[in-house]
Image 1 (cartoon, rainbow, N blue to C red):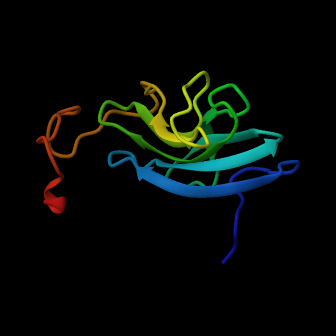
Image 2 (cartoon, rainbow, N blue to C red):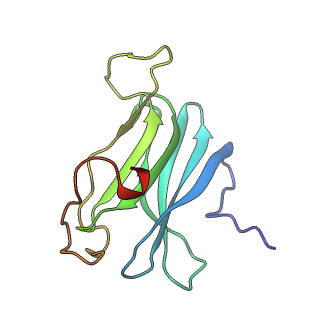
Image 3 (cartoon, one colour):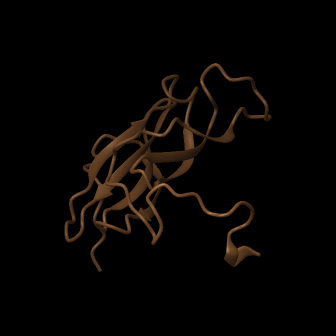
Amino acid sequence: MTFTPLINYAGYAHVLNALPCFVHPGNGNLYGVAVEKQSGTKQNLSVYRARPGSLERELVKRYTGGGVDAQSQIAAGGCVIDRDGSLHVWASADPVGGEKITETGFVGGFWEPIPGVDEPWSSGGAAGEPGPPGLAPHLR
C-alpha cells in the first residue's frame, strides 16, 4: 500500500495527527483534519475535503495557532458538515484571550460554524430537521 501525504509538507516541523471525520451522505465528499506544526507555537488545524474518486485534497479552512485562532497550539480536532451544509469544527486548544480554566489552558471547544461549505443533506427527513432530545437511539 502506498502512503500519500495530504499536501506537500516540505518545511513543516511535523504533523501531529490526521484523520477522516465525515462523509457527506448526499454527494460523498470526505472531510478530514490534520494538526500541522510549522514553527514555534504555530500548530494549526487544517480541514481538508476529498471529492469522490479523487486523490487530491483541497484545503477548506485552516485554524491557526500562535495567537490567531488559538493562543499557542491546536492539539487535536475534528469536523462535520451539518444538514444545512455548514462546517462545524471542534478542537483541543487554548483560546485567544480566554481565561485559563485548566492547568495548561487547553480546553475542548468549537469555532463558529461556517455556512455554505457543502450542499444541504437529509437522512430521510427534511434538511435541518432536529432529532429527538436526549441520547441517540443506539446509545440508550
